[in-house]
Image 1 (cartoon, one colour):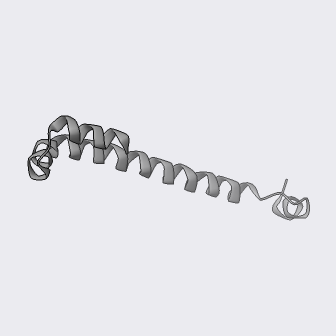
Image 2 (spheres, rainbow, N blue to C red; image 1 turned 30 degrees about the horizontal axis):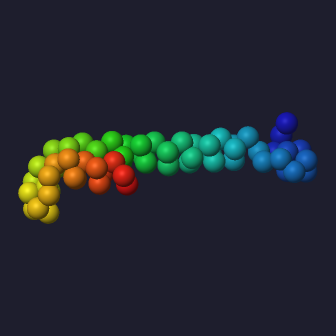
Length: 67
């Protein structure tokens, strides 16, 4: 199906659909990367954060898990 027939039939051309799917995939992949990065950064700094806040490591872990 060419572009003119696709638009006449009310369907998006294949290029647009692939582009939209690519943007969704890029957004989800970026979110997953940032979540992984955040988890690893917090695991490295959790002892320092617990000391600065005046609580235990277990309390900080509970706060991270609940969010």
